Image 1 (cartoon, rainbow, N blue to C red):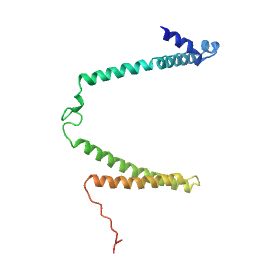
Image 2: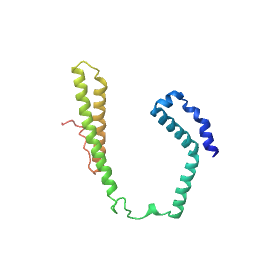
Image 3: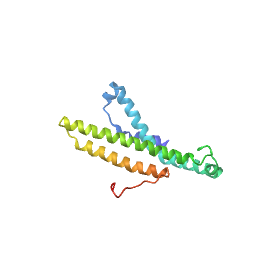
Image 4: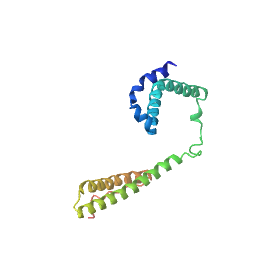
Length: 154
């Protein structure tokens, strides 16, 4: 009960005119929310201690739950995670190329309308460049070799 008294003592964090509290419902709601935040802040260490104890006791009771072979997360297929990463890289690559095209188009439009255009162009070019790097990573993840023509067509 002393903690509740402490919350009431720390009520000065939300001093509001009494006339305003009588007239405004939102002021009363705001005051209650601030009091709730002060209370939660007061019991936060106890909540952390209880949660840590609970999770630690669960870890000691069932220590091998995360090490079950062929778990349900990936459906027993070890290639699922790799395929998911490759798909995420492919979608990120495509999104970066699209953002680069949109950024350059936006910068060009701003250039034609005599507005600031430099940041849009730089952002678009950076998206295209980083999209090229991601495309290279995606190509390597597929097992494809990337040929670099150093003869420049000769």
